[in-house]
Image (tube, rainbow, N blue to C red; front, side, top):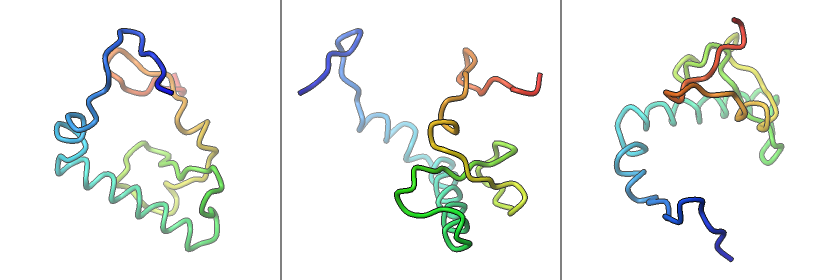
Length: 93
């Protein structure tokens, strides 16, 4: 069953991949996130299918220092408020 979309247009997944996910920069970021997950998996802090995310404390996905990585529930890691420009709203302010 396909759920209706608010403006009744379907997402163009191929277009999204072509315009964003396939860019060199995004591929490097994704590879770095996967590396961070692998590091935490090897250290025993996360397990496959555990519902946890490996978060980067400073928000930089390319910074995989041990001190910058933390394990958080996926629901918490993916629920940040966003600004008009899709940036995370700072919780420190």
